[in-house]
Length: 487
Ligand code: N01
Image 1 (cartoon, protein in one colour):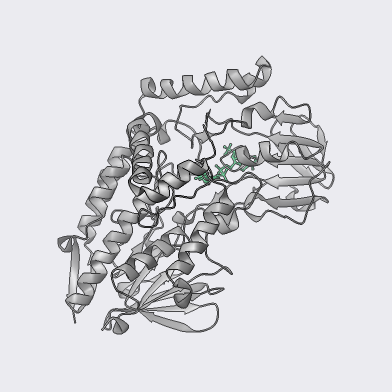
Image 2 (tube, helix red, strand yellow):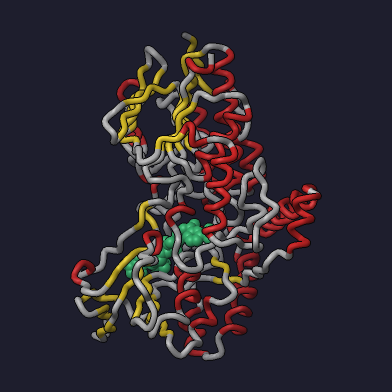
């Protein structure tokens, strides 16, 4: 029967791989994973820049059903996270289900048959009863709109497309941007380059990371006494939840605790008062993503590193010209300028019931029921969808709840031989009205600019609350929330 129930998983990053494993654990083998790149891994395949690591501790930034006692550090490097994803892909024989280098280019729902037809860039089609979309939100590098960008005669690349063939040794290098990627790149390349200029538009709140390597005996303990690994995971998780309100609530008293911690860190790392002044943020703690690093700020004390706060006016063949007329001559420019948020539009044309287009539906901002299902798009489950991103903890808590929800729906569809489930519009609307109401109390709208916000300043990216609360709300599939269509 399962073979009559083809499932398409789009994307083979954490979300897609986690879904595939959960389907297998439930005894469902009739799925195909479509991945547009040449291998699995998503973010961790693409982000190979020096210093790349996750800013969530590894014991928590891994799947609960595939824990790893062998992480080398509290915050393991990107290469280790990618190795973990490759390892579980092979362990679960997911390659038998994988179609690499295959991008989905469109999807259309046939209401009569209860089937999605997916078209691929290989020129073929695939019929699926259910689609699990795990395409990720921070995938496509954002190229800044700076005058003359293309005229630069040196080497230029984005952090998520690192040019490992280019040797930075002794070179005059610029990093544009001071977000989560930049703060990892800057300290990593500073000792290697000749001169490093960091172009900062907005300073960021940075807190100490407290990274350390796990000893062999600790790893042995985690492997042989799995409860200790669970305990470590739970400890990280609950600590982040306890500190969550300091990060997501618009509560100046709570924010000031975070600000004080960050400023103490700044004082410790930077002795020069003028430099400290330039590095000090003026917006409320948590409004933009809080960054963690033990060496980013200290890097500006190096003789070969300059912080440039003068706005960029133009890029010229020889380098970057700032608004004061200075031409900063360069050999290479590294764009640490973030990503085009994938949540503002459908990842490819998606046509639901009655010819409804997902792009059109999301014209005023992406919305979904619990971030997962959109009315009019039956049997379509989005992972890491609208308003499901956390500012304070591991995104995988949310993703695992979403996988459980999708699995609950799939099991109902299969066992009751149903045509489709389609979230009721009024249920979806009521849920999202509640989300936007809560946004009023969140720090993200307190006045800074960030990728969290859409052009109209509404927030369709983050979940306004605790991860535990989201997981409890989202993980069960409640049939009463859905229109259920039998064959
Ligand atoms: O990108 P960002 P990122 N001229 O968008 C600046 C995740 N992540 O790649 O702040 C000059 O945060 C821009 O300036 P401003 C994580 O979710 C996770 O660093 O807009 N500057 C900003 O400083 C993160 O939030 C990890 O004024 C320009 C920077 O570029 C997300 O990815 C590690 C500019 C962009 O910062 C994105 O992080 C890395 C211009 N025209 C990333 N345009 C983990 O460890 C942009 N900027 C899990």
